[in-house]
Length: 474
Ligand code: NAD
Image (cartoon, rainbow, N blue to C red; front, top):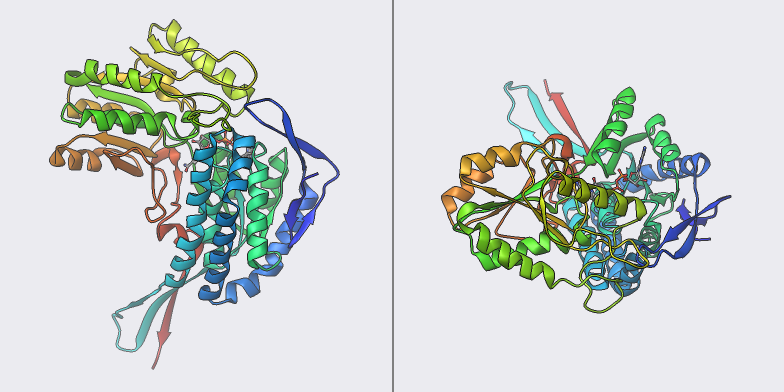
């Protein structure tokens, strides 16, 4: 049994749950199935650890986080293999994720030292005003499976750097990566109780404990909009702070004046090469201006045809399986429904034969903006291509969704780029790029894509309370 990590110790549970390799459908591990008892132990440990950890100078906390980064980097190959086993993404992509995820540890080790307050000019001669930032307290976190390492460090690095203690429940599909990160933190000297992992098949007793225990001051969640709404509603009872990184429905807009070859290459990357399309910032609706539509489509088809699908351990594979049977069935049904409504499937459009939850890279044209394929997160290797005529039209169409996470613009016209940058209702705008974000830039959603930001310096402030002080000196 793979044990969970509570109060600096490795802890078993009465039951276990299976972790399945989505490429082979084989059970690769049995993991401790925690519940109410374990999460309460973890919250208690985090509560007891908080006073010392929060008082430790940020520079010392940062030194520990830097050691944790070094430990993750030293084990990058091993952790990448775990990711490929439990998540399915290709090994090279998994290694890239591990190295990127470790970068949050050093970024926030540094940012923690810059948690500045303000001295505010007073309107009275006898009063002094200033603000300070202090860690919010025990944080309960819940993470998804699509970036099993990065979704964890993007939360815990700022929380720990700020001086918070943390209980984390990783996704039930990918607990092994989370446990490997716990090893890296433990070996770096994170004091007992400061960081805890409760693995569980059923997330509800874990989130219920976060919600009901007044010592948990904040819940940070990355996952679907539906669960985000549920948690936000439940947190209202104690007016508990929530940070929510939720789903997306990213438009990618390619104008006639774009550098077409670069647009094709980068769009293929942001659509297909991030966990095979199972990423919150993947291009979900690809709007191509009429003048280049045919040429773009021909080049995009050629590019996508060249992508290699298979077991992530096979060298050269660029797209792995979907995470599970449920995801495969959902994607298949979405494409079938879109076909039935009259869209044309130009490539793929079906699951792949044999073991594993593989779906063929797919290109669809002729759908409509109000169909489910354009309104919902696709979360699979499906490119939905739409055409448009002019700028104002495409802005309105791109914004016509409940989501507001990421949007992509491909154009060489700076004035147009700036007009779109202002008009698009999205938290992250990428121009002529398909690589995703960096540690330095905050990430988060407008509208139903979430509340709060991760990364950048804003990511640190999420885990801190702002205290205002007024002193009468007369
Ligand atoms: P999910 O919401 O089903 O699960 C995410 C996490 O929530 C898992 O740990 C799961 O165990 C837990 N969970 C599920 N039901 C719960 C409940 N009732 N109460 C408490 N916890 C519960 O989402 P998923 O399918 O694992 O992840 C994909 C979603 O995550 C997509 O919508 C994607 O866009 C989103 N996502 C967003 C970002 C971002 O940065 N905004 C990043 C990655 C993923």
